[in-house]
Image 1 (cartoon, rainbow, N blue to C red):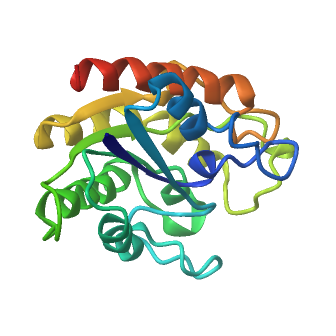
Image 2 (image 1 turned 60 degrees about the vertical axis):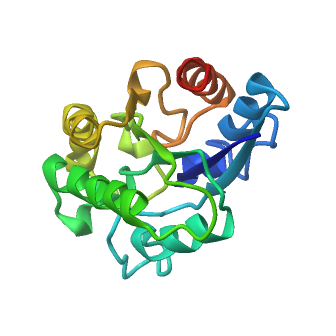
Length: 208
């Protein structure tokens, strides 16, 4: 059994642009499980508002750096961690440029590599650069994002790719396969399907 932890934000949680949450078989971790089959165990660990390393004064208890060690221990042994964060670091009140957002992802990769696993070895990492936000913020119900946030999400991929190269881990630019839905932030069902398919191909190749 290949154990895969999907550690991400609301697009890993499956927030639906129309409201609520996509069903398990629509969310990309659930779709990924179906595509990979019974030799793999895909673990969902998504939370709306989750950042890489920042404490959000408006949405507490969303810091990835705080919860990642808990997830690594509670779901061990792990063969792969899919790290899919960064959008919430682009919120206007953090005032972060793309390089600093990527630095947060860099820190989480370091944590995965150096964590003292109590069972199993150190898992591989697949770093996902997030989808881009849409431009029409009049349709976005989340006040923490502004046009600078949009621009930041559109500039992240090269910085995340450099982080992946530095750690020797797998990399996927989600913006190349999926896009935000009507709320300018979250994926529709087709985005989850496309992301799961792209991840599936990479994972099958890595663990062939």
